[in-house]
Length: 176
Image (spheres, rainbow, N blue to C red):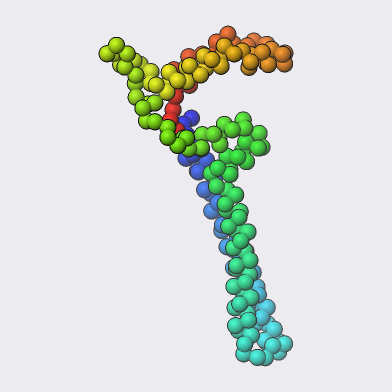
């Protein structure tokens, strides 16, 4: 799955969560404001308050209740951003750590678009891109160091592969 598709999928997953959380906090704030205004109205009706300034105090308290609900609402909605949902899914073990958040990261500053252009050798355009060649070189060195295989053998893993695989088709270089 590409980074763009991953971002869209996580956005589709988190959008209803954000909307429902925001609606819940708005309902809570409006309910608290209505409750406070109703309580103040009953206080006047029962003659506990008689001064005309109670109207201003009641609306100030109601606005305070709305503002008091705004801060936790903002925090809750920000916790449901695409990146936060990806991180939470990784923490819960639904995905391997870094598999979603790494796709959401932007490429490093200064990365060249030339990595996507096919290389030319002896006047012929080669089938793979510079990015694929660079990735192949990295995998080549990674394989020959043998550290990863050595660790897996030391842990008792069996059925280890003898080669990295067809990285040009299974894991080609993608700029996302």
